[in-house]
Image (cartoon, rainbow, N blue to C red; front, side, top):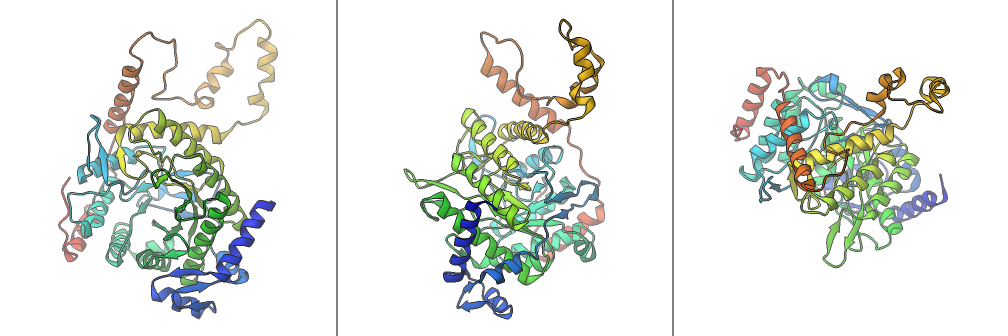
Length: 468
């Protein structure tokens, strides 16, 4: 470990030993006492040995599966698995109208991402539907999710009822508790309430998901200058403390519970007080989070996915999203949440931004794949044959490798520069890509008995699912 990581680790240990972490759910403090930790009211204190012993129980990698086991993903290897945006309150229409998101938007976006090879893990609540009761929203969206896709997913959670809905509906869709125990089927993100605190609901669903053997990602989103120290080094110490404390709690609940090290701290824009998700400091956070996750041997969620502060899909959203997606991928992020479709920080989803981000993800994946070095790819025999006066266009080596060596864009324009109509042409390509992807959607083969059982379960909860 380099000197910087050693210093952040040592400072983290001192903070958790002297200040501790507040868990506002009484059960968390009681559990910590049973594990021999020092507890004062709601505050749990860790020695370095206690913390590292607990964190070391978390697996370095695990498989997350959806209804279709062929679409399961290995989390914790070199690959970055991208997850679209989640829980945005608003939907930005193609005509530029910003309005409350509704269930039809949820279904449309879920279909778009289901068919996307760039998106192996779905967002359970890709938008927050404002046309259903807030307390029933999760039941409505999961009922649709399990009919529209068979990929693994990351779920929203919240109060105890929402937590119960998420776990029990996932159990029904995946064939019962025995199947849930064999392999994790659902992931949830628990955000600490910076600084050094986790609220009652987040603590509850962290413990419930860990108890059920499902995946918990502990991911502080502290803002340097408002909810964390202004200096990034200080913000990273606090973030590291919050993340490790949350993972330690998950391991107290169930040793070996799959846990993801989250590190998406960024800065506050002190001119407005807003979070700055498109700031270069977000990319720096991904870089340092990756170094620390490697030290603790944990799978990780780094940076802000494809987040941007821009409120329209354009130049700013493109360069900020590309920066965030590339930084997280190169830093070794195992999962990348909020990776596609999000505008205005976390506020709105948009179809144009979604397909633009998926183009960016394709480019990022190509960069990360790097090159293959072999006798075939170094092509000495081809160079000796062609140079100095020949060309490579008609060589069989070119025909053999051109499709797999070069990323093929759907949106980018390559060709002579035209004198007019560039912006119109760009918009036309984006609209055509949306239409192409939407037309390609085909629903998964979900047994009618599953839909029937989900509907019966929701009826017991007093929820009549919305027909979309």
